[in-house]
Image 1 (tube, rainbow, N blue to C red):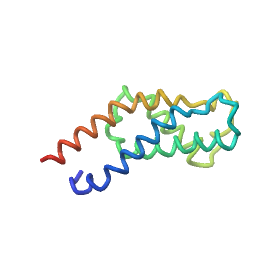
Image 2: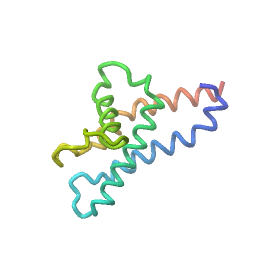
Image 3: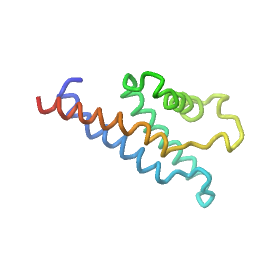
Image 4: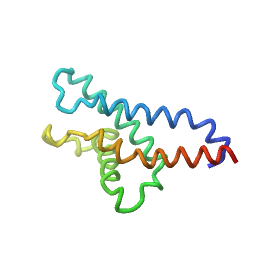
Length: 122
């Protein structure tokens, strides 16, 4: 990636990542004290940020090691980002493991930031 583009994009990249991490803490799965609307909104916001970052870093998620994460990205497309029949199902099938998604992405996000920051210094 061109250094000038990265310098402009970096704050947006960091914003996406911070939103994912912060929303993982607020994960509404099984938290019935939230209204359905707020709970659904938190899920949708997390999934949008996850999809944005995943798509931006997609080539880094190649191989068997990231198969589960790719399944989660496909699930995001089918259950949240598009109106499909994949939205049908029992509530237990709808739970997302936000902390696991963040944990799986953390090393890739960190590596990308290190790579780009080194490039910025060149």
